[in-house]
Length: 267
Ligand SMILES: [Zn+2]
Image 1 (tube, rainbow, N blue to C red):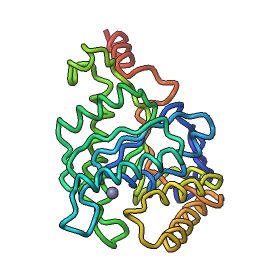
Image 2 (cartoon, rainbow, N blue to C red; image 1 turned 30 degrees about the vertical axis):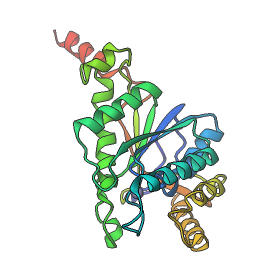
Image 3 (cartoon, protein in one colour; image 1 turned 90 degrees about the vertical axis):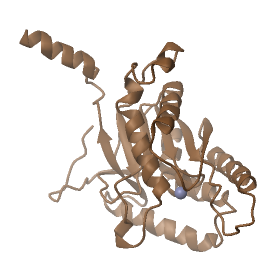
């Protein structure tokens, strides 16, 4: 469904399409909760089923060089599983890629295609890989950018192409058409999901990441201000902004069928 737009091109109403099944692909434990947790909770409350994939377990997410990174990874996985329960995901997968060294390569892509073809989401949410310098104040973590590109490349064309990683299809993991992408932490939001009813769940999920958050009160205030600012775009109390990419409309036939149809007409 297309949103109404204001003269400057910004949507004037909250985004109202909802996937039956969605997958959040994140670089680190806590990214999904700093990111689209309130949207995930809102969709789940309305009947969607969500799954979270963490590419790394955040084993570099500390300040103590003497800390055992595997111990930290175990703590962060526990925190993320607790947070995922607060949001309401059906489950979490950890791919155990190295923190700080995530690369959009064929190994990561195969892992993500396997996850997509197993859970079979209609939509995938991931970090906007083109947001390198957020609002000119800092650098977006290299893992966030790598995870965003990897998610996009796994969705299209690999997940829907049975000849990509053919051993997956041969072992029963059939192709999956993901119709939409939602990129969070973006500088070019074109869709705003109303999260007024679930902002509390996002804060509850964030509270689970005790190893990462020192001053929760300050964070809570910052998060509330940020979602309120985005809510103003569409006239609601709180919203999550996304760069929304429609690969296939709901009504559209599969691209391969469309192409074959066109070829028949021409012939
Ligand atoms: Zn992160």
